[in-house]
Image 1: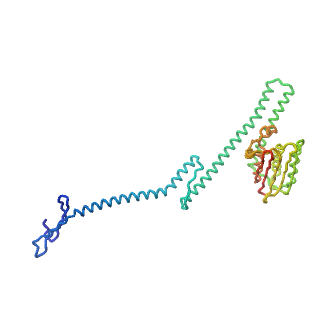
Image 2 (image 1 turned 90 degrees about the vertical axis):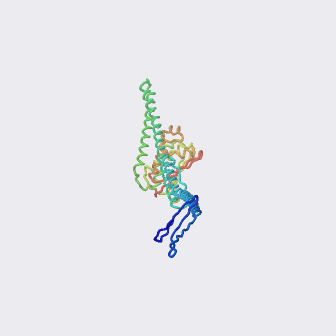
Length: 356
């Protein structure tokens, strides 16, 4: 190891077997410039410690990286889990599971978003339920309408064919003609009632102030003939002088309700028609002591073509549209109609007017 002549030192690393040495050589200054100083340092232990430290640092760094990755994964999962739930819930709702809701916990922005999503889901469920109910009612209406038409049309066709092919006496011919006329009148009644319902749904009514006494008197005169021989008493109680609405429609409403009471009552029956004020609103009630109805019937009596006692309604010539028309009349007056009834105790129909 000869150091350079310019006085610089020479540094080198040498390996000997398993050891590593650092060698520093340099010439001494004058007057000892004929001498060279050589320093040898064994760095084997230091290099070994450094390698060990590097391994430890790598291991610690790896462990910390894994922990940080796991922590970041948990944080991201915490952040994105609600979004994943929203996505899954949206797919469930799209597949028809309208009752599915998001879990709500905490008061942060994600919880507010979950609450808003649930409100939206509830509104969707409500609207879908309404659409389904409307579709079911429409289908039921079509089925019932077809059934109501089939019965008289079958009878008319049958009697017409009978008259065409059979040799009939004058009495039999007149009997068949009378039956054809009767069933034709039933079809005419159904058509007229359906047109009335359509008109009530699409056209506004004529609002006028009506005197309740005059309204009740007109209804009483109309029903007088139907009470002949039935031994049924009708009582009118008036505590309200006037009411707003269409006179003809209000008469039709009361006549239909009272007529139902007449049909439900036996001889000696009693019907009370009252016009009163309840909680600041005008109310008309029609109460009878007739047969009454079950809760199952009450929930359906205002549906078109529904009849609680089908045999009795058919014998009376009804098609099950009377209370459906009553419902439309009440709705057109922005009023509310409810029924309270028990089998054997009679029925009370209540119309509550929201306008004075």
